[in-house]
Image (cartoon, rainbow, N blue to C red; front, side):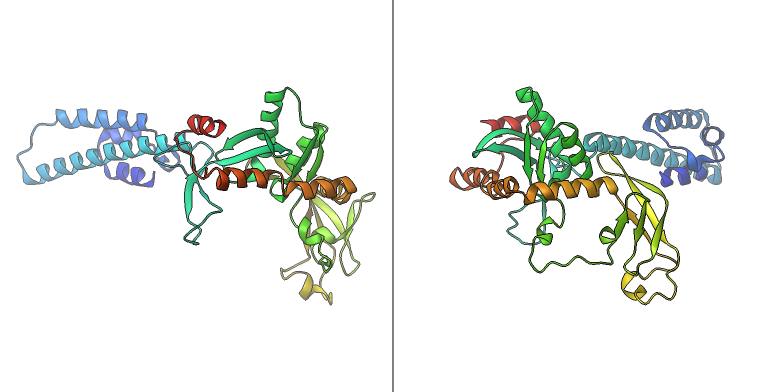
Amino acid sequence: MKKIHVLLGQIDDVIAREKSSENNEEVEFTPAMLTEMAGELRHALEQVSEPSAKEEKTELKKKRKQLKELEEHRDKLQEYDCHLETLQERNSYSKTDKDATFMRMKEDAMRNGQTKPGYNLQIGTENQFITDFALFPNPTDTLTLIPFLQSFSNRYDRMTHTVVADSGYGSEENYLFMSENGMEAYVKYNYFHMEQRPRFKPDPFKAENFYYNEEHDFCICPMGQRMRRIGTRNVKTASGYVSENARYRAVRCEGCPLRCRCFKAKGNRTIELNHRLRQYKRRAKELLCSEKGLKHRGQRCIEPEAVFGQIKNNMNYKRFRHFGKDKVFMDFAF
């Protein structure tokens, strides 16, 4: 876009000056605008008679060259628009299969983290039988849980009663969806496995480990100082979900003997806490550590993993044989 602004600044034709406003740095040019602009500039140049003087010939040649550059920029903009239309919300796509997204695969023969075009296949199983499956263009499992559960509901005309999943699916948005739909969420969150280690000791200087007084809405730092509520910050996720983080600030950190271990920034320490997510994590931990939760956690390791092992190793089905999401869906279904 900057190249177009520079080019229009170089074109001293009257039409170009009319089409380009004084604040053209703020104009978002489209291929249609550039096509119209180039057409009028071409028409204006065709009206000019062939000059005889050397300087006039040089100037006319320069204008024709600028017109050609403008048309090239228009073609590039059209190409970029086509790419963006294909990308949608993704950050990459394959030229041979435009529905596929470049992802890091678990099987990395070169061990260099090379990305390859593929689909994020999600399956739901019960007693090692596939109950539902879906294909997603994004590599993050967090964004797939809600549409996958909705797909299950559309297929069976009811929501599932129990969800068992690993920590890749444990987000506030997912916990909220499962809670609103009456599901028992045996879904791990980040650091759950670390918390279960016998030698695990929570870091007292991490904000999530500060004591929180729910009644009066304040926190206590490791030194015993009260941290007052100073506001709320909204955080928007990749899916568009907005979470609220409560912000707290200490009154005086100057001279604190624990400051070197607490934080290194200037001024008083400010922390953010997501109270809703903390509640969901506590509830998830209670379910996962219950007798029923221990059973589900042990079963989860042999449910979907055994199915994938059967498909990949025993059936030697490691790659999709078709291109395009619809054909790949049919490929896996058969």
